[in-house]
Image (cartoon, rainbow, N blue to C red; front, side, top):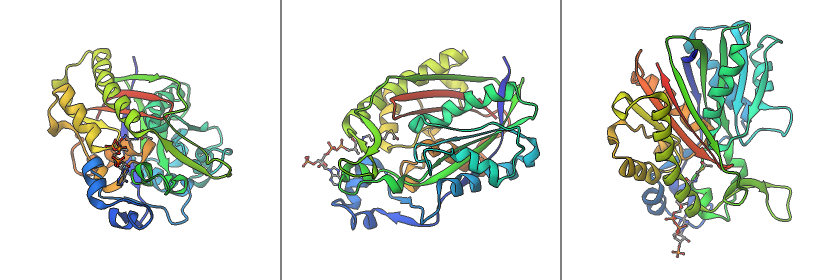
Length: 313
Ligand code: ACO
């Protein structure tokens, strides 16, 4: 089966850093609680920049890293749950700003924090019927605008940012993906606050925690089985960066080596669909992703959705 290769990554993080002490001025919390319960030390908030601004900036960097031009792009996908508008999709605005060719499908994916992993499979499908070799896949979120500072257990967790990847089909880069959903609209989501037009995130933190620590180990296992690989074959596990305690619990449950788990939630908080591509871009920058490196990415989020993917570099 034709696989996919990631040939370039990029990220764009808004300038404004919001520390835990600064969050403590907006809601009844403190640095010690946030650090010990989540591992988060700071997050970045957009100052008026739109989702399309973030997504375009990350996509431009990924295209530069891949050394490709707009006329080589045949698919443009943005995974997000915080689009600028219900319609048109953020991806269409990235398409316009990057002057991608007209015969290029552009669409958003709404799969919560699993969006980038769903996107890998969707992008592969589009590439199989594209006349041009490359797909742009972006995870981009402006979560700060849907935070509810009256809900202290949720608002401290999230941050803004975008991560992007340029993909191409490859017979020498096997790709395995496991995707799932257990439909639920109570545990985690983003809806209008009661009596207002304003959207805000709601979450049952302890239920989501339980869901994550049960689902992620199964998902890693299922993905390894489908890829016919053992844990020793994987160089890095790249989990959705929601919470350091969730990742620590996954490590305890799976007995996988801690040093293989990439962690950056302390710097960004939970950036939802952007968290995995931001992590991959940091890893590429640090020289961790050499040709032949095998990563297993795993995510979970609103929907409830989950996904795992083995990506070879
Ligand atoms: N600051 C200070 N105290 C707080 C805060 C806060 N920000 N939030 C809650 N508390 C208090 C509570 O009021 C409670 O106090 P009480 O014991 O006096 O009643 C106490 O802390 C414990 O509250 P819990 O909700 O039980 O805290 P818990 O240890 O479960 O941690 C947390 C909460 C961090 C939200 C945890 O449940 C969690 O990590 N859940 C998963 C969240 C997540 O990762 N979601 C995203 C996944 S999907 C996606 O990415 C969209």
